[in-house]
Length: 264
Image (cartoon, rainbow, N blue to C red):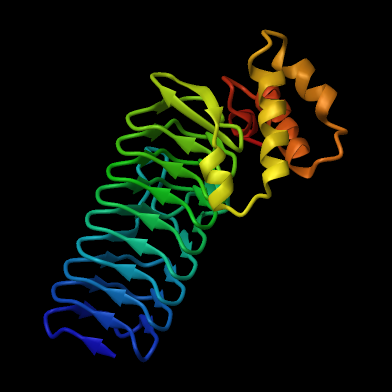
């Protein structure tokens, strides 16, 4: 290990042999860091944090600090992070609470930019990009390949479908369907995220089908719920995914499906 002399690493932390730790970083007991990871200067990894392999924390990143939840009473909880993630300066990632398995989870190949925050009990998939100063409240779920532009924010218990794009400074208070672009205050669906689907390797014919379905759901003025029910048995997996997501949203509370699960 390459640990700077000014770093404070508890003897009970578990770091792979090739982990690099920068100056003035603090790593508490019980933290686990996988092979090939680099922890920059001034970072703080709290008890309950597990990081996979080849993660990069550039500087002043905090991982696994207590949740910002007034009901939290200091019990043991965790944050589990996958492989090949990049966390830029002043990112903060909070561990979970007893409300949801005491766990915050982040997948692989995510790029979390300067000043962004991921709250307690969140679940993030893989290949997600959070641009500067994105704030995600507790209990949110983000699917794979979601992109959130700068200063966007999610209300607690919000779900974001995969390959969705959220515009800069958007205030998101309802679930965001997969494959769409949203923006505004409050944010609204604007169009299909065609570029995002292309980058995700979706075939052209499937993108065109989603665009057709999008027009049927969001541009006819008819009931979103009725249109989604009509598409639920469609042969396309992507169309079914979109329809099922919309029906869950409609069944939720305040437009957030996971809000309806609170206390269950």
